[in-house]
Structure formats: structure tokens, C-alpha cells
Length: 64
Image (tube, rainbow, N blue to C red; front, side, top):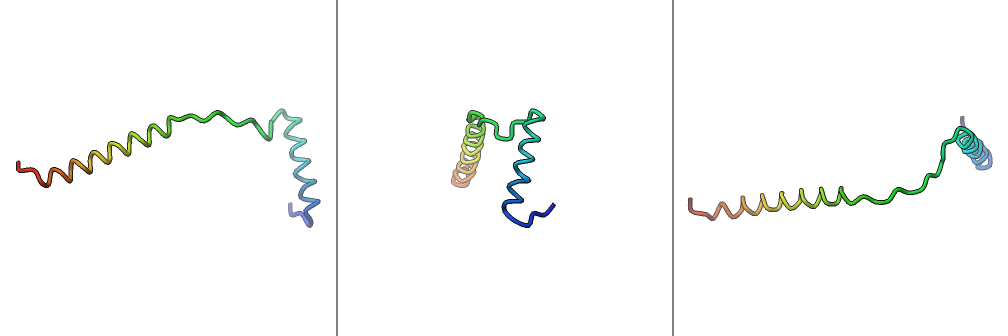
């Protein structure tokens, strides 16, 4: 469905929001609290990669 004006588009969106609320769907739910596990996972991955690169670089200078 293509709207011819902004008013028609807003009217269509208002109808959709009304239908969603009638069905029990919250169109604008509250934000969830942030979870830091992704930051910790990325940080640990980066630490492991950096240790791997440094050990590989230092191994070039070792006399084995």
C-alpha cells in the first residue's frame, strides 16, 4: 500500500499501532538493561589474540 501524502502514511501507522495494542502487542517496549557479557567475551578474545601474536613474534628471536 502506497501512501500519497504524509498524512495518509501517519493515519496508516496509527491504525497499525491501534491493531497491535488491541492484540496485546506493545509497539514500544521498555529497553532491556545492558548485559556486559559481550564486552567481556570480546575483550578476552582480543587478549588471547594479542598474546598469540606477541608470543609468535618473540619466538622468532628465540634460539631453540
